[in-house]
Image (cartoon, rainbow, N blue to C red; front, side, top):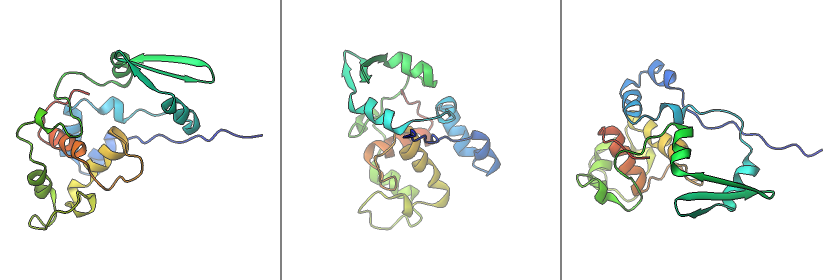
Length: 172
């Protein structure tokens, strides 16, 4: 008999942040109202998720998909209500730094580096100060998951990190 693969979801326990002394990050994520979303847990079936996203269409602000002939429909508001996200705030998207006019990618990333005078060729997590590494991992693994490379940050990741650290409310 072929068993379905079950994965444990990537979650963040806010109590862990406090226990480990990451009070500042705890407060920043709490300000963004991400606690419910980041602590979502349950069983995940990767094969079903893959089929869902393979068949996913976006029409007139509605997400449509089907699995084995079962049609699913979900709008942004319903999705945000389920996961506890809020719509008010800056819309952060890759290549849309204009939504946060004071954001400067090079300057912000340079401030996060262990060696702020190092030449910046790529935006990697490894060069960041130790206390700065946790937020990008939360962003790239849970909030806006990357396909595979979680250590390279794109512009959208950096804008999102900047907004979270600067207490600029993000409209999820």
